Amino acid sequence: MSVQDPVQPNHLSESRHEGAGWWMREAVLAIGLVVLILGSMWIATGTFPPMVVVESGSMMHDLEDGSIGAIDPGDLVLVINPARVDIVTYAEAIQEGNEDFGYESHGMPGDVIIYRKNGDSATPVIHRALLKAVANTSGGWDIPGTPLVNVQTVSITLDYPCYFHGHLTIVDWTPSHEGYLTTGDNTITNGCKIDQISATGQDSRNGLKDENGMPVTAVMDEWVVGVASTELPWIGAIKLLVSGTQGSVTASTWNNLVLTIALILASPLIIDSASARLRGSDEEE
Image (cartoon, rainbow, N blue to C red; front, side, top):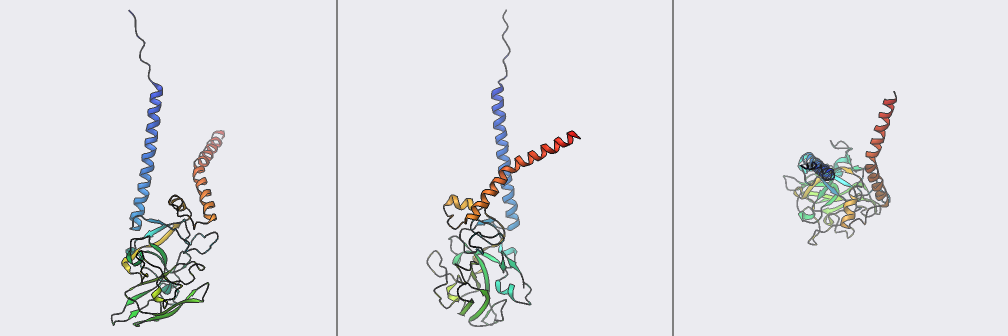
């Protein structure tokens, strides 16, 4: 009677199954980590998405290389829900005796806000809040951070240096509603070019327009979608590259991004090498 050989296990098949299982576990862990990070940031900031990528150079301080601490093209900026913070304007932060005197954010006095132009659906603007017009119960306007109280029109010169024409000046502005006046930090391209042309005597050097071609008015509270908090420099340049909007990203940002990615990729090897050396030294002892 002949006896058949027992069926040999298919080691190759098992190896493939193990390899597939390993990749699936790693993918699930990676996705889980991303969800955990985004979820934590959502809870912490109160906004989703909790970060925005800066596209333009309107907030740059160093035009050649950019600068950590200021907002440059390609930076990721953490966005805080405006309901969770009290927005401090530039005027309040430079007024001696004010409770917010000396407060700075991203390299200059006052907060940087993210807002929708006239509440439209276009890409939001990320600029500094200069001052805010607040309706007085008597019918006039108050400007916190300045001596102006219950005035019918707003005329004031702020101690805000401009590259081209001295200091920032508001000329006979009659607000149509409560809201912020805003501008970018870039002294070359902005230079005191206020986003709201109505506040500068219709100065043609100033003013943004919304998606319908209408001049931007004072930023109402409900148009503010966030307050700029911590920045992650350079990382957002990847998104701009993919979307084809990387034109304002500096060479320095690209160099720093490549170096950062290289360090991230090399870090496991560095850690493993360091661990192996430590184990080797322990064994020798």
